Length: 256
Image 1 (cartoon, rainbow, N blue to C red):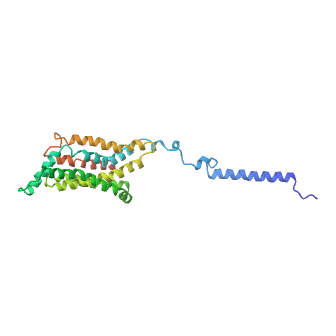
Image 2 (cartoon, rainbow, N blue to C red; image 1 turned 120 degrees about the horizontal axis):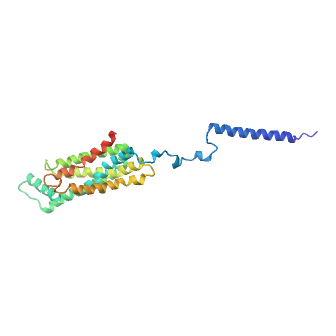
Image 3 (cartoon, rainbow, N blue to C red; image 1 turned 90 degrees about the horizontal axis):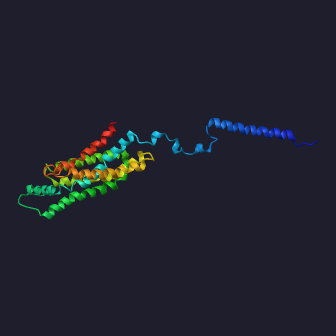
C-alpha cells in the first residue's frame, strides 16, 4: 500500500495554513491599527503637527518678549548709555574726590582712568557671567536663570542710581560690574530659551530677536543719554538706572 499523502490532503493542509496566516494578520491589524502600514512606526511628519504648534501665537510672542526684555535690552542699553554723559560723570568723580579730601586734587588722567574703569568693568562682568552661564542654567533651569538674572540687573540699577546721591563712584563701578554679570549670563540663557520654545519653522526668525533687541535699545540709549533728555549734570544717574524698567517688563508677561 502507498503510504504517501494524497494530493487532496496536501491542498487541504496548505489552505488551513494560509487561512491561519490571514487570521493572524487580521488580528494584528485589529490590535495595532495601522500596523500594515510601515510608515506608522516613523515619526509624524510636519503635515501631522497641529497648525497651532507651528504658528505665531500670543503666548509665544510674550515668552520671547519676556526673554529679550530682561537680557538683550539691558545689553544694548548698557553698551551705549555711558557715552553722552561722560563729561558730567567725570566731573562727578572729581567732585567726589574733592569732597572727601578738599586739600588734594586729582589729575585729569586719573579721572579719565576711573571713568574708563566704570565703562570697561561692564565687559569684565559680562565675561564672568558668560563663563558661569552653563552652570547656573543646569542648576536653575532656563526660567529660573532668567529670574536670577533679573534680580542681579535690578540690584545693579539701584546701585548706579544711588551712586550720585551718596557721592560714591565706587558704587557706580560696582553697579556696572553687576550689570555686566547679568548681561553676560543673559546672552547665554535667553537665546537658548527662545530656540527651545520656538517652533522649528519660526526658530530662525525668533532667534534673531535677541540681536534685534540689542541694536534697537542701543539706539534708544543714545537718545536717552542726551543732555536735553536724561544725560544732564543732575539727571545722568537716572539715565544709568533706567534699565530697571526692562527688569519689570520681563515680569509683566508672566502675569498672563
